[in-house]
Length: 207
Ligand SMILES: Nc1ncnc2c1ncn2[C@@H]1O[C@H](COP(=O)(O)OP(=O)(O)OP(=O)(O)O)[C@@H](O)[C@H]1O
Ligand SMILES: Nc1nc2c(ncn2[C@@H]2O[C@H](COP(=O)(O)O)[C@@H](O)[C@H]2O)c(=O)[nH]1
Image 1 (cartoon, helix red, strand yellow):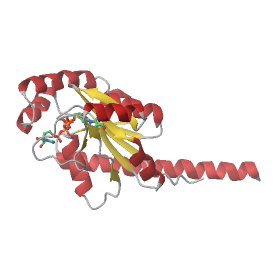
Image 2 (image 1 turned 60 degrees about the vertical axis):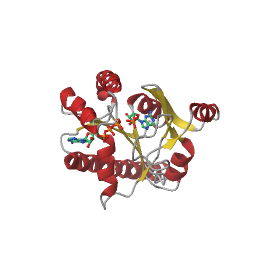
Image 3 (image 1 turned 90 degrees about the vertical axis):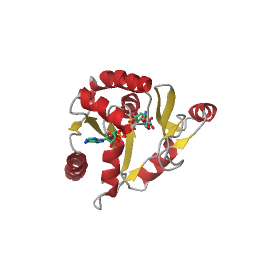
């Protein structure tokens, strides 16, 4: 009755809140043993980004062909580009007993919730909108127009944070990292308790 499958962990939140930064801190930490699902996107590669490490970079045509072939567990259009989570990696990795970590925007997270209601959903929130905008500006990767667009999206996304299992405020990267790791640990313990109760109930019923 024990679940041999890994846990699906979804970290979501507005662009610039620090999802990638917190995720890197989590994966650099020696206690972390889950796997990161690399997304596909049609967005232009930024300076320093590596295909197959940061994203799998695809053309619009390639991405749309993969949609047709049902190759994503979720995908969304965000600020003019496609982003999606490849199904094969997630299925195979979870089936092998590993936890899989997704870092995605909120529309994609909604789709994952429909397909995997048992997944763990964590919303990473900024201390406030001013700091969110400052982080996007300081990151220096987007034009003022794209930043405005991302902030507009953020206002919409922040209204949806109550749909998540947990909200973590990224005021400090190491604090946020610790909170996410504690939430994952607690979810494993809860799952083990539920499974143990179910096992006992089954034994009683079968006696
Ligand atoms: N707690 C924090 N305090 C101050 N700056 C931060 C914090 N966390 C992240 N940052 C900075 O904010 C900027 C945006 O972070 P990051 O790229 O990780 O965001 P993101 O949510 O992954 O964005 P996107 O969704 O667009 O990929 C980066 O320059 C990063 O160094
Ligand atoms: N729905 C999905 N959203 C994703 C995925 N991979 C990344 N993202 C999110 O897109 C925005 C923009 O990312 P950027 O790299 O262009 O700044 C951001 O919120 C990412 O978290 C995905 O597979 N599906």
